[in-house]
Image (cartoon, rainbow, N blue to C red; front, top):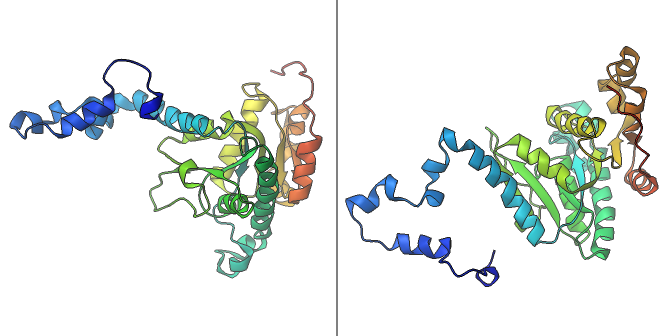
Length: 279
């Protein structure tokens, strides 16, 4: 929020932060108790303040995305370890090297969708990734190649991870809470595209599918890149046969192999009428 957007007569917090920095140096002013509560990081990191931190992580990206005019996103989930085809020789395993073509599909998909987004002044169908390497990098890279912007929702991990170099800087966010990060993935999502990945990708995919299955989220186009990969690691039919999911649940998503197929699936998608909720 800029100074010009403030429309109230009371002194604002920014002015008091500046004033507090100029107070005389005394034992009292040096005491942690004297710090303004909202500038006191030690206070904000207390266990009792977790509800406040959750709210801040929800609000900060929300307000910035609103201010930037981002109305809808196309979400890309996928593995951080999948290499650029040019560097597949460096892949950790031969299997990862074989998956490298999905990097290029993610990049091309993001490029094509961003070209469309630019036609709506970059407000609609903005590419949104986890902001890391692999498939995430490919998505942000494709958006940059197209001359558009993209969102990166990064998260603090025990090992060093910086946002990839292709995320639009002022749309690059960092999270502590996985749950709030996953909310931001879906709050503006117009479509979800899932590429091969590991635990994180599976977590994101199944949470989104669960929200749609239980009608906590509206149905949207939901595409999985690489039928062979997904049918190898998940026995979808066994889930239906065992009765742990309904036959209709397998209609919540569809498989594609290429960027063009994914775009065609999204374009052809028609929201189906709501049937009875299976318990």
